[in-house]
Amino acid sequence: DTEVTQTPKHLVMGMTNKKSLKCEQHMGHRAMYWYKQKAKKPPELMFVYSYEKLSINESVPSRFSPECPNSSLLNLHLHALQPEDSALYLCASSQDSPGQGAGGYTFGSGTRLTVV
Amino acid sequence: RKEVEQDPGPFNVPEGATVAFNCTYSNSASQSFFWYRQDCRKEPKLLMSVYSSGNEDGRFTAQLNRASQYISLLIRDSKLSDSATYLCVVILGNTGKLIFGQGTTLQVKP
Image 1 (tube, rainbow over the protein chains, first blue to last red):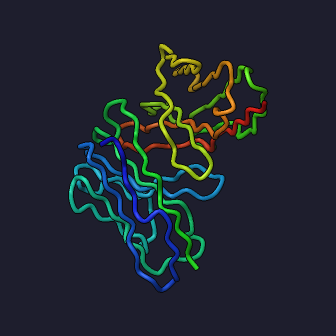
Image 2: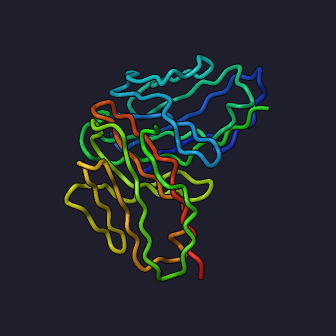
């Protein structure tokens, strides 16, 4: 299994809703990431988990709450989002600890989120 | 100044053409370098890693110049299927932060 699986693929939520994005990999990768990508822009890093511990939070608003239940799973809990949070949310994983080795990162196909 | 800069294009080239993309990065602590390809409404996919010695994969050649903090990608004999956005990507030091350039759009026309 060489994939990163993200669910759901599409999500529409209201500003008062609570929802979660899920990411799963079974490649034994020890680092996992959340990225946000707006249309015609490059992905922007949100969070980095290394060995199931949060190692980087790029000053992301608290309405986004990451969780890493185990080495294969990464969640992103959403609450009280704004319409400007609408974007493609990408999960990625890498074999080594962040910054170690030259291995590339494997991205999931993303969750396209629309906040109404 | 952006940490990773690319010419956004678009580059419109005929099939069979050779096209070159350039990228510069500002942080000398940058450790690893990659080219990713992203198709419209899809996730980025690793195209190739970039090394100082240069590396080649079929029609694609990537080169890194650490002294100039410059990365290049050369595509020979362009195919219609090469049409995509090419993202220059840098890992900063030991942080694991994958920093993307804004991407260069390539459109190969028949």
